[in-house]
Image 1 (tube, rainbow, N blue to C red):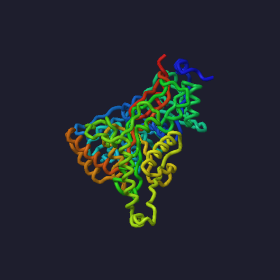
Image 2: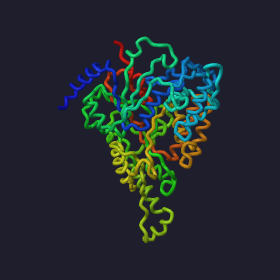
Image 3: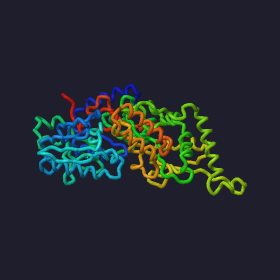
Image 4: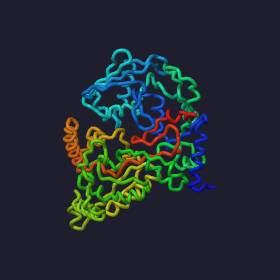
Length: 490
């Protein structure tokens, strides 16, 4: 029997309260995969700093640090502790582990953010210095990412120990004295074991209805439609106010996509208001901007595109552009003009993952593009494609991240050299007002190139009872596991 939603809210609260003192906390990571791997790495291999449940930078392997006045040197004092193999945590060993972690980023989206790291030095005793080629106000936030978890001989220094029980990751907080730190009295009474398992959205929602103390992590746009048929109270749905990239990346510049004006026609044709209604995610709104509105340092000089046109007018302009291209397409113009050969069809392959949200997204995009004369074909996430979905959360809230993700270094061949040049000037300007104006110029150049078609912000969510210990929505969509293992005060 399904309980009415108001009664379910009461049951959820009571169940959560009764489970706070149990020995085990059960968590589900939707679909597992990279998100689960990152959560486990963050729990078992700390970096110099970490994030708490509210997304704030907190001490980890380094218990304190200083930043020089010019913002180009970060000096970390390491805690008095050991690695997992019992060897001392020293500046030299931390330097080696940090250099290894940075090398592992090559070829990833995060590598662009660490391009300013000029040198890593081990200083006396337990001191490490990181020198930058330019100031990075959000550098500590970057160092707290799971990918910067440090390991020695393949093993991190905690704060949790991992063992596997089939698909379940069993994570146990390590006693401080086992990590070379001062002992904490009654440690075992202050912590609990976590059982983290992967799960499909519908299965996880069914489990949550039966066990409201369950915590479900890793929700994206692709899992959101599963909530429509679930009896989950609104108070348990915890949305993260993230920024980032959610849109279509142009994979190549061949054929129809070789002209920036044609790429703009695709962007114009998409009805973002209709997409928001299709997602049925309250508060989610579409955008035509590349840099998320409200990002730190954004002066608000760049407006939404085509704001003077209705959606019908946008689609009419896009259809006219499509019709012009079909008539004048290379190799077809003369034949089509003489009526001997039909103008070529515009057909584009869109790479999407499988899932309910991707189904909704494809149906909406296919209808919009069909209205202007484009046939959209869905292919798998790893298949050859013309357009590819990008769904990525920004690890810090500055325009620099967006330019790093969309610049020519990250996406050679499908980019704007003019935008890169404008951003390079902005990056080195010390005056905030002048920097803001130059960033607006760089974004305008990048928008004109139409190598990325923004749809809106990423959608990230979890399920957790309102009084769940160690959990809070945050702007990075990161939910560390250790706080969830702590018991509430008795």
